Length: 116
Image (cartoon, rainbow, N blue to C red; front, side, top):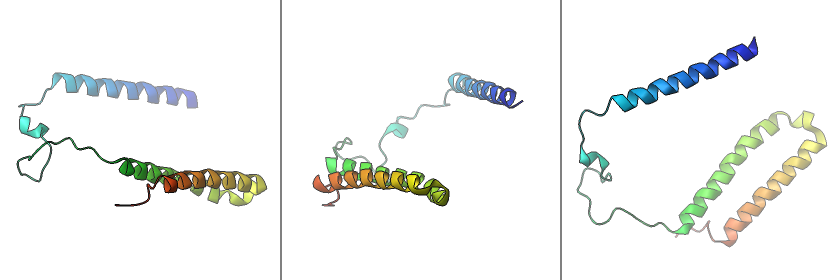
């Protein structure tokens, strides 16, 4: 019974995605407005070039944020089963924190945490 409902779910999902793709290809926008494709500048005319190059520090800061954001996804389930995981679970989370610490140390050495 469970496999039948799973197969039905995937069939319905593929059907709905197909209908959405067909509908979007046959129903184009009513009018083309080139202003909609310009960069947003608070309603003002764009001054200068719109392509900006950011320093690598911004990207390193974003990667560090993602690392420590994903960390919480793994910490919360571990915290709920901490008593049943025993010493093995504790050793695994210590290794996990060690690897995260290496990532933080790398960011510190590359001066990604300095905001200038």
